[in-house]
Length: 178
Image (cartoon, rainbow, N blue to C red):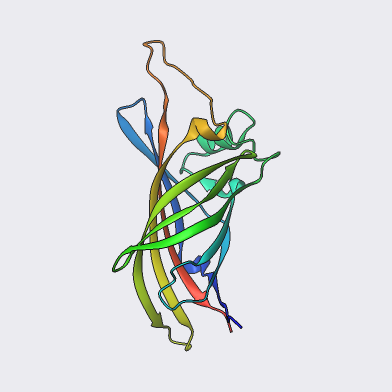
């Protein structure tokens, strides 16, 4: 019988950030303050781990309230109808000593596409309370239009206000469950 080790995301020591080009000349950053996820693995090196992740759209923060409300509105994320972004892994493959390729189904606004993200394993350690922790940095890029985020505002000069490519950086600390 295979014994699975379960891990939960420690939200106090994790973060979900994104970056997108504004007017195609500068970058705007934002983050999500509320998210959750689990990891199940049968191997100490996390290879073949099963990963599920959910982000609460309403927790979006770009430090500009007006922009946040626009992004949450029906014109972009439509948080009222689609309150979560979800991810479910299809594979987690070791590519180098501490590097992995994470493939899975990402769902935004009810549209699911397979994405591949790069993962760097930072290691594991025990905290002050004897809990086993593991750290990862997940990075990647997605095209917002593939997920129905098609709002294209154009300036009078013809510049696109929001770029299509979204850069993701997710720093995650997991806590091993008893």
